Length: 546
Image 1 (tube, rainbow, N blue to C red):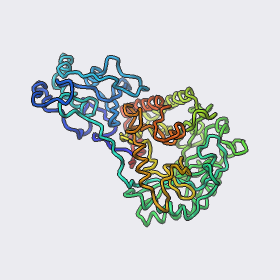
Image 2 (cartoon, helix red, strand yellow; image 1 turned 90 degrees about the horizontal axis):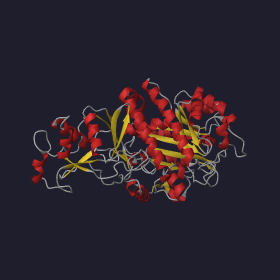
Image 3 (cartoon, rainbow, N blue to C red; image 1 turned 30 degrees about the vertical axis):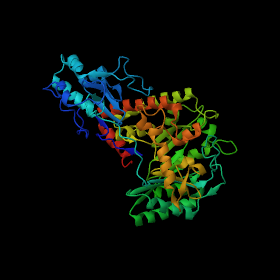
């Protein structure tokens, strides 16, 4: 769930800090203009807080440099702005003497520093005209980079917390068509496929009810998505085929398009299955952890022997013969598996369009959990891949490092998120029996059950979840400069780490801030030198998101 901020979103390569369109917020108080002293208006404008004289205070911004240019990321509105020389100097002048904190630090404006307008004019008048100073102050205020004190109108403020309106339209259902798996991956969050319960397959009746539920509860969405999941979903191929036929027909009757995706371990990818996937434009994400030496460490059959040699030729056949959708790889990073670049290039050489990497979600005591040192090693690998990504982007070439593509999409869209993902909102998981859950990671958990596709969504329970999971309730997030991008992190990881899902994932806060700061640097360099790449490859990624 996210909210649009009340100023233009995305990146603004600014000249004199002028955005593409004027902000919707009120203009600077009339007393501040180029021809009159701002102090003349004070008797008619009672101050609302100290100091009494008109003054300026730096807003909640992260300053950073890229390509020899200055930028600010405004935390409250998730927007990036380029600064001209005067803008950069003013921001630095308002900054406490200690200077900007490191990216890992949550609070980017560590102390209140009120600077009077008189002092600002006195400091800068030798090199800039009064009009230049005033206009730049107005524009900085308009983007939320600073605020004025001593006036009733104190500039941009974050809106009070608001829960999303219910019923919230559903866009995606993740169907566990098979609570079973032929592999026994040691790190599997689904207890090696059965979610800790009896092994079973989704019935035709449950599948149809799931489709009906999605179409009936999708609101104005013209396109909805069914994700075939497990366990290993292809263990129930017959039901998947029936569901595709039924969903296409039901979608046509409802005036909606149903799209299909699947996550698979690739062991059932026969030529006939691949033909079915291609004929029905089913998007495929393959779970593969890189070369054999890494993949076979933990992605094994239940008897312990590795699965790489068996799936490798099947994946190559999929990549050659799936003609209608691009195929992605998803690698899980575990203890001892942090060679991201080695794994990435191996997957690219196989022919995958994209590869994404997910640090394992686990309690710290598990033997496959990443150590803190390994997590930073992963970031170092991400940084090197990001550098290659940017260089390719400047040549109009796409590198399928989906972690960075997804982050760039978030930054470009500029959504102000109150929740880290669509779990419990536009996305729900459906268990084999038809029970609704927050997402696929919570399938078959009675604690996180949210209704049933036949009976409907438990709106009261959903509302309680949304209230408690809202960003405004997460201790430690309120002053963090990435809060509207991260929103506290994955609910399931919080549940695994802390025993309940309403806490922020504090164990990787510094890591995620550093990663997002890297994303900012990559984004502005691409936008500065080749904005067409963003339009072609990034804008469509975030199109249609809530």
